[in-house]
Image 1 (cartoon, rainbow, N blue to C red):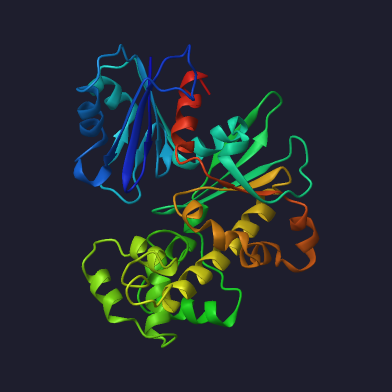
Image 2 (cartoon, helix red, strand yellow; image 1 turned 90 degrees about the vertical axis):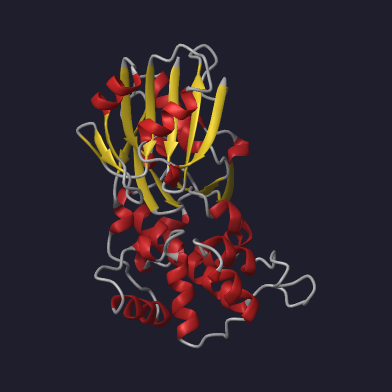
Length: 337
């Protein structure tokens, strides 16, 4: 049997698969807060102590680059080595792959209910595909047809330089350059980046931060969920009793975020000629789907001058299945990619 995992900076999903039942039907699974464990081995052993199945091998998608069977989690102090992990966990083999490679591996196996199509485009059969996934960080990958099946190529494109596309984004870049050495797309297009946009808009005087929001932000280690909830008017302090509705500062933060994400999705689509489709994954897009359905995302995606018509032909889908990376890790292990 196969142990598969999706390892993120915030949480880790693990599941056990029987090859006879395939990648969609785990026989056991669990989710753990990544930061509460000193290593992946410790986390995995905690899971294995609760089950009794004959595990022979493992396949893990990890949020960081994998080189020569070794990896580090970008937003965690973990280091991993396939051989060492196999010995520690007493498995025949352990395979590590980048988490975006895991998502890409699962894309050919997606079902209709796993995605929402923002634009159908005119897909080219066996053309290249692109994947962009804002979660805790920003992941990017692409797929190419290799004769009998698609092959996924991992990248660290999320750490490329942020390129503003309008005066407000230029001001955002200037604001961040005073506070950090390098401003990548991940700094403005991820769970870690969303608070940077919020801080810029707040400090630039776009709107006043209400007292209830100041209090909530001060009480949590991660402000991103609070900002998203306030933008959607889900927080009781933002609506309910006070009748204030969505907070303008948080709404503007998400609108800026969506525009930047659309522009970078378009950049990636051009770089890899994603004529078979662009897939938007990660934990954030499904939570802000109404904003992605509006024109702002696709306008930013297509705003590429002479190549706007080319981008208009490319299908764009949002991945709704939260277990997509786990499914990809399972496919990778079960089919011996």
